[in-house]
Every structure is written in structure tokens, then in C-alpha cells.
Length: 505
Image (cartoon, rainbow, N blue to C red; front, side, top):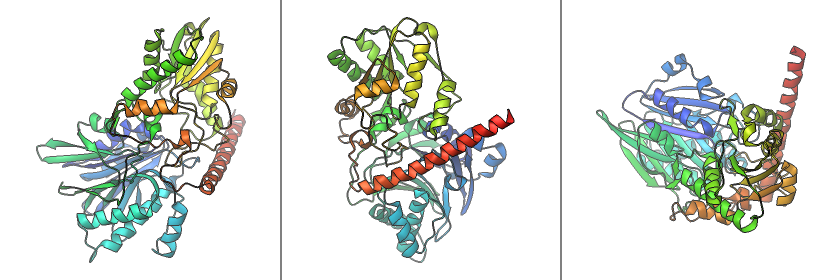
């Protein structure tokens, strides 16, 4: 769930890219990077942490050029940040290329072997994004006559990427001396949209993971990049687009609408805010049908992404809606944070209960989803400590029972609280008096109803159905082993940090 951007402007793009990354900060707080092109010369700065912490004035001044890409990252392998894996990535042969990637390849090991043994290319990190970059570089090399590129050659190279790479990928890249390239995987799992603005010097273009970045910077949204499509904008601002996949279909990630995207974004013609309102309505209808016996005094959202669903649920049930938790906006998302210890500690720092909204009441807490259950358990306990008589819990998403392999850091199955447990057992685990989950069919209908042209979604974390058709049990086992190792390293690092703090104290 990284955030990516690309801009081709008529003047310096460094400020545009920085401002856009701030808007996309919710898509990753692990690392950030910007690369710009000044003719055939790249300038790049990247580092770990929030956007505001990575870039200083001296860094921004060095990012010269009218074309650039940017990336904000969170780890997809369950491990803490590594400087070597922050993006954009760079390769210098046969053309200078920098690339930023949102998603996850599911055949990385196979591609690494092909790159080393057949393409004679070296991959220096564990990142699948570096693998993707080298596959693109090789395909460009294979198609370029006399090492010269044109749009047709570039699009042919993207076709080669589609032929070789499996999984999810939305990509922005710059080719030194040529321009900006962007493309989306043939299943359209991860989002990518573009817009433009007219200036006195000519047309400027921007691509981003979410439409909100375009809105915030004054660009007019044109459309989403289609699954399998590539666009190329040369240094003079000429725009080219072509379908590069033999077969393509649109299957946007359902979890984007539940949790990941900002509510003011529109993705594949679907308003995120409107889908969340409809999630609240269908959840309220389920409560009416199956839990009419619940004596609910007040509906309280768990900020921030559950607010639209909670408001609509309260309205539909004719119940009071109240803000019962105040959020500290300077604490990162706990779902993204690696390490169970760090997540648990951050919940109390992140949220504080308003006692008057809980004392002596039967409260219905509404959240967007329940993944590990750690946060939910802490929040239910906070509600009880604030004086709630009963605590009911409603999730706008169905039970998360399966790992996500397409770019979201879903933990191993034994860490997912819903795996192997009934709703009643999960309710006991988180300490709730009653737990109500959204039905998957209702969630799909909620999202599809906003844009009926989108008929299928990537819903593997709920259903266990992996849309690309190449995800085997062996692959899932290997991914989970990697995540377990990463989690162990996180716990070890957290324990050492706690020990160091105790020594300092």
C-alpha cells in the first residue's frame, strides 16, 4: 500500500512532488523518496520516516528538474525499514531509469533467477520493486534498436513486463533523457490515476495513487490508468497511451475502499466516501435483521476511517452518534506499524476516551475492519474503563481470514484473529459483548453500487480467492515464513529498545 506520484511540468517539480507526498502520507510512513530529472541527469533523495522528516530545504533545493517521481513506503514483508529498500530505485544500464512501485510481485524468486542467469542482471536488495525495475530495464534493452527509444519501443517493453511479472503493480518511472512512464498491472489491483492542468507555458501532467493528490495540487482528473495500460509523457509534454497487456480485466482491491484510501478520493470511478456510507447502511440493515435485541444507547466511531460508516449506521438505526475517542494525529497507523509490541503501545498514545460518552451506556463501537484484534481489544477495554455498561463492536468489513499478497502487509494466518474462530469466539477475544461483521456479498454490493461498471474486486483477504491465479499454498507458506522471521526481528529490536530505555532510566 505505498503511495506513488509522477509529474511532468513546465517548471521545477520538487515542491509539487513534496506537497503530493504529504497528501499521500496515509499510504505509508516507513520511508519516502523523490527523484527528479534535469535533462539526462537524475537527482534523488530518500530516507526513512515521515515525509516531513525525510526532506530538508537543502534536499529540496538539490532536486532540480521539470520531471519527477515520488514514493512513500510502508513495508510489505512484515519487517522494519531498511535504507536499501526505500524508493525510488535506480539502474543505469542500458538507460538510466528510476522507478517507484506500489504492490507486490508474486513470482519474485523466479524473476530473480531469470535476471541473474539469463538477463545477466544483479539485484542487490530483497525488494520486488528492484526486481521489477531490472525486468523493465532488460525489456527496454531487448527492444531498443541502436539504444534509441520511442513510445512504441517503450510500450513493447511494458508488454514484456506484463508477460513476465505476476502479482500487483502500479508503477511510475523516469527514463533519462526521454520522459515519464507509468503503467498498471493487467488485473488493475493497485490504483493509478492521472490528471492535467493548463498553464501559460503549456499542459502539465500528474499521476498518483489517489485522486486526492491531484485535487490538492490543482490538477483536473482525467481518468484512471486502465489495467495493463501504459502512458508515456516525453520531456516536451507529448502524451502517449497504449494497452500493453494481451488480456486485462479490472479487479480493484476491495480493502482500498474499506481502509487504505482517503475518503475524499475517487478510485476507478468509485467514491471512497460514498462506499463507506453504504457500508454503514448495509451494516445497520444486518443489525436490524439479526441483532434487533441489542439495547444500543449510542454509536461511536473508532477514528478516522470508520466515521462515514458509523454516521450512516447511527442514522439508519435512529440512534445518537457521538465522538467518544480523541485521536492524536501525530501517531502513525497501528495497522502499518511493524511489531506487535509497538502496535499495542501506540493504541493508548493514539486514542483517548471521552468519559461522558461512555459512562453508564451501552455503546456500539464501529471500526472499518479487524485484522489482528490487538487494537480492537485495547479499545474495548478503554471503553469499559471509561464506564461503558456494555460494549458492542461492529466491523464495516467482513472477517479478515487470509493473507494479502498484493501489497498489503496482512500478517500470517495465525496472527489474524478471525482465522479459525467463530464470531462469538472473536468477540470473547476482544472483550466485546457482541460482535457484528459485515457480509462479504454486502460489502461488494456497497462498492459496486457506486460504479456498476466495476463488476469484480480483489477480495482475497476476506475470501481466500487470489485473482491472479498463481498463488499456491507453497507460495503462501513461504510468504508467511518470511513474515514470521520479520516479526521475530521486530520483537527482538523492540525488546532491545525497551532494555536500553530501562538502562537509561
